[in-house]
Image 1 (cartoon, helix red, strand yellow):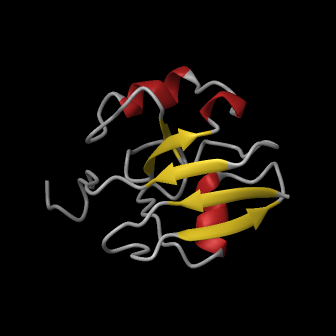
Image 2: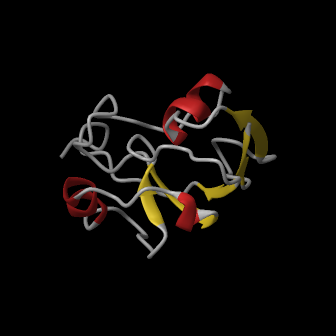
Length: 112
């Protein structure tokens, strides 16, 4: 089992969270299954940036992002070198420390 440690987020998980998952699941699916409501406006199809997370520890254990994911990350709020779209990031064998950014860009809910 791989441990996912979610850092505290004011609205989504104020206390933070630690969950254990089987490798092969995406960060977004693992979070959703454990009542951590990471937004995913495009239904996890890699067509938006609402599920953007920053992997603070364990980033090197992840497969590289695809070109499409990188293109969308370029549009995310607060992107950092260790940013990923959680719907596209498959958990491997190494524990991860994950930060959910304070803001997200959701063109649908923001009436753009």
